Length: 413
Image (cartoon, rainbow, N blue to C red; front, side, top):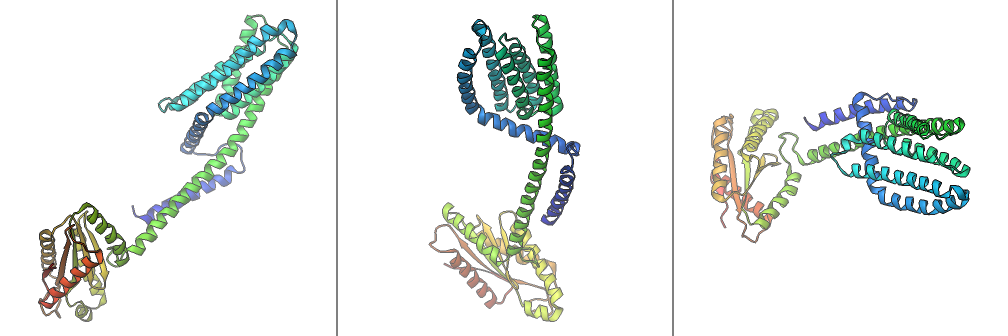
């Protein structure tokens, strides 16, 4: 697929995403396709797992500081007779919260476990909420009872906003933990006011669910915008490549042009110097091409140049570089090629062009189109520059033309 087709497809994809973004701006509910929905949740999970891994140790430190501050405050603010009982329950809830965070942290670090993120996190949150709710609703002091309900509500909202779970999965975990908590309280015969239970379970889950839906709606817009930015980046990159190619490519023959040759030849020559390997340069000229143009017309002249270019491209292979240097002049750069093999390559090019039998009625050396080729080779040992090598190939070409054209001449050192 060429660059123009790729750009067209990317622009089409961008327009589709922009249309979805425009509609999503006006709706809370998702209008994503199944594929886009899966990508959104995968992206969200990946971002959250990276955040969990990055923030685990700072969060642990903050959590410990919170415990060190809150435990004495709770201890001295409650009735003396309830201190031992309630503090042990508070410690249990704090430890459970940290263990839940630690479990998610361990899973987030393991790439093999990430595919089970939703199931594992739903289970961890359900169990953790059940334990935290059960112990905090079992405290005996009035002060800790109300503080416990506040902690539970905060924990629920934190789980809805930061777990990365879909709202329905989190709602399931929240409601299931509420049911399990009620079963536990009934089993241990702990009476809790229905007003308190409603405040904790309904308020905590409803507020958490609402905030989660709002947050996810905003994240969907951000997700679509990030896709558009990525598509724009890909389009600009392809256009940049296309412009670079156009500036370094001959439009008629599709070979590298002189500007592209200068950049590439410098790199190849430097590489040959560093590795001390041979680098061959063939300077090629179409014999009597001006006469060909005058006789057959410029359109046929262009066709002849294209056929020469195709021949050079075929001979260059994967290691060589074929160049239209200007007008009827061409270059062929061959890596790891000594003089003997370079001359054989040049002779093969001459033979191939002859066998194509491109008529040239105004040529004084043949009835068909012919080439003259000068060959120069850097062996890896000479103290010369790339410009010296180019001049040597040019001089060899000049000698080939002086000696009658339709021939190969090697540069002499």
